[in-house]
Image (cartoon, rainbow, N blue to C red; front, side, top):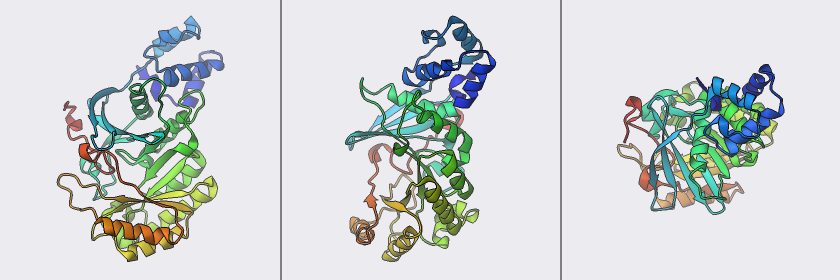
Length: 347
């Protein structure tokens, strides 16, 4: 039986109309599913008994199981391992930051992009997450927050390439910003991509949330060494797609730049970022590399990081150094992986 959390808003509305139910039932059901987080249709007390019976006959409500939690002693972030119905697993990271409660979401089990500095890439791609599994991460984490607290920000920067699972991500985003579902602000949702140019162009029309590009190198050759996707979508083509996104969405693009010692941390790299940044309305996040066991790269010295930052800041770019959360529990940027997921093992 189908998990109702996998139905898009449009799909659910169409099913309700087909069954002859009132249109306002859509609003009520969305509130029960995503705001009150009910576990059964019988709990939906303000819709008719007939409607509840129809829902019970056709759907289930399946929530993700939190299989493990790893709390960072360094910064208070928490890495969640969610067990999926087929035994595989994904990880999400909750990051309390000042007045924000940010959740880093996964969109796939593993990843097919093969970025050389990312631990998730070592898993390869096992499968896409469904809409319900994407939203289930939000529901699962929200249910563990103290009463009165709620998630304020969502970033698609966990396991997987969101634009490689485009349709499920877009339908999940629609429910995230719906007033009757998660009611999150468009301005507080960011989707990160390694640079799938056609999807970047579509994204400006399909979802008015923020876009982040994993840039990570400033030349074609340098990007190809780090990110195999560059063979299909050269840097120039990706930058053109970002220009189109910025123009149509009226949003800046965030350039995510993972700094790797002796690879992309020179003054010449900073100069080339400035040239790229002059072409695209942007802000720049410098991310000192987060090593993991077996990693071939190292983090630059703090002096290198600060010099790189100063060069860009002196040229009036909106630039931040983003020190990742959860380093002590392998929850930082590029560190997520579930080695036991393929066989459905628990760990």
